[in-house]
Length: 404
Image (cartoon, rainbow, N blue to C red; front, side, top):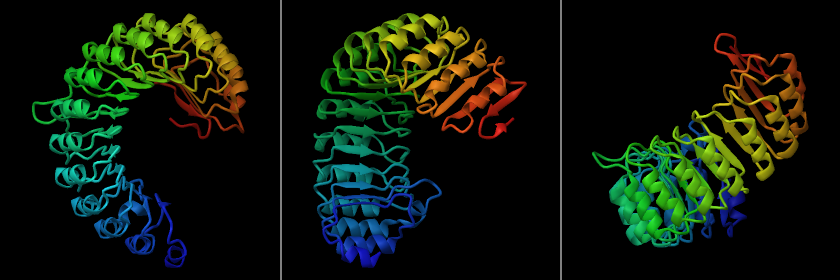
């Protein structure tokens, strides 16, 4: 590594994620590449980057690379307040910080980031339960340019998020999946109403796994005042057709909807499909009453031909005709998941032959009329196929044949 870094003194961006990089290598990079602006050493739980990168090297990067604008240390569990504080002290141009899964990072260093990095535009701190409202409130106060905030599985509540909405009015993306709150305080409709009042540029909102306190009241406000929404993920029991209809009426650019709300029916879904023709992903992972029908699929393929990902939890009323229509009109479909599809037969698989080049994943549940012979259609294709016939018969996976 030393040979290369000496030859790259003007290196500005380096991605060594999921590699065998060590502290020694990163220190050499920091010593020789002082113009470095972006460094990514993210990794998965088993990657060497996660195991080898510690405060020792990240602190040197922070001390030497004063033009650093982007630091991604996602999954580096040995990165703590010590090195993040050094980065905050020296890298005032920092715009992007990803500390997801870095459990050693707390409110202490994140408050320093807020105070000394006023140009911060993106903060990703998923699964860091050692940070809370104290640091996020400070981020809101000092980092007015913030556009992306991702705090999945963090202990955050209305106390700080309400301030984020008021102070960071250029916010584009807010991801709060499974936020558990702090003490008696949680994320509620108060935050959503604040977003509606102040963040008209919002494009992405993910609030799956947050209940109670979130429902139609807050989401109707967001949908009605954030017309640029493109990506929405919700699963609250207190969400009904009213929210989906409002999204359809006010957010014509919607491309991505994940909806696990039991109160949503095919009535509002029909309106959504008619109005939001840019839809590319539709994930309905809860029971729909009444179930999804062939008529709804017919409308979908006519209005949303660019669909790439479809998941219907309740497909008990769908016939082979629906699958044939999808194969004929949605030629870019990459993922198709249909649960409880008891009426589908081998003819449905045959119709999907035309999608062999694009379809990456096919997952059908409780489809007793599909045979193993029908799966031969996907032999030597890129499609990963998982077929569950019934709980008693087990499941078929084309790559492994019978898996249970």
